[in-house]
Length: 96
Image 1 (cartoon, rainbow, N blue to C red):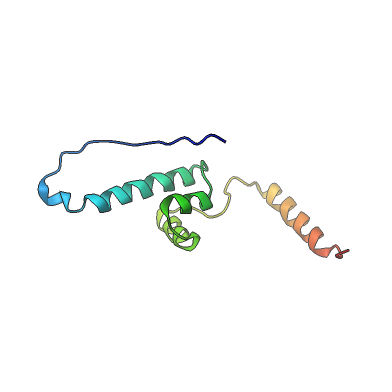
Image 2 (tube, rainbow, N blue to C red):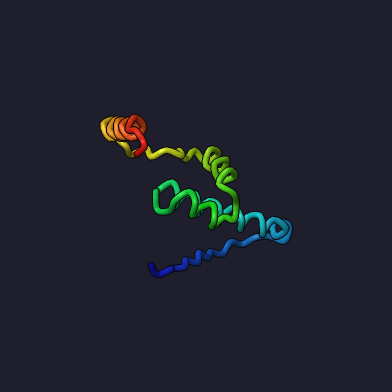
């Protein structure tokens, strides 16, 4: 798969007092962008953690703070029921 890079740039007029927080603000902007990609399902949690250079555990905390569910909310009750039945069937089958 070909890799694509995205560079997001914008300019804000800031006075010198605010420039001391520039690095922190840039980090938060990247974090917000990656979390939004994750929220929309464009990237996986593993990829989000790698992009942010954090552990999956730390990512789960960020997801909680951002209100992002770690579960696939698009599953219907029927689909979830089918997955559970399939898992139980696999669990009940003896190992050969």
